[in-house]
Image (cartoon, rainbow, N blue to C red; front, top):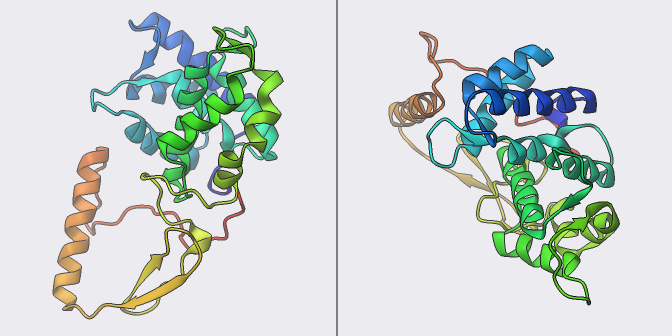
Length: 254
């Protein structure tokens, strides 16, 4: 995921602090609006390319379409975009969700955190876990032999998270979640009149030949581009162009 962004820990720490301050100042202390997120981005000095990614991720996290997201879930979801190994990324995500610094989280909060990371991974085309896989992971790791407790010192369970079979599936790109798109490194390159197809299990690559009238294809693409622009609140140029992520870039494992 971090191949497309250039976030540093100190930037996301400052961004979280800005989110928290804005949320407390402008009403619901748990949520921020798109304009508040943009205000925070500007205050922190996030580069334009990363700011565009965050704006699109805001749309994904705005589940109800009311221009508000839970900033703890959002900041934890983007925490793995830093350049680090898997353990450090998960540790950082836990810290980002723990906005008051108690060192403790409830199991339902860890479910929300991991689901947020899952959602961010889906944006970048990485395979994801199903909701049930996330829940099973958390129940296995956090429900101790002593029985359920209210909250946990999450640092004590970090290795349990990253070593759990479901998380290993996620990191190695073999997830089968409903939100998952084809991982970029599992997709065959595009060629003339060819469509990229990826086996859901990542075990086979297939090129499918599509013979369509050029005008039909052009109209379909234009309609899809316009619909996406409307959904994201983007003004298209006169030529209908917009900046895209290069799908041919190499992608490292999560």
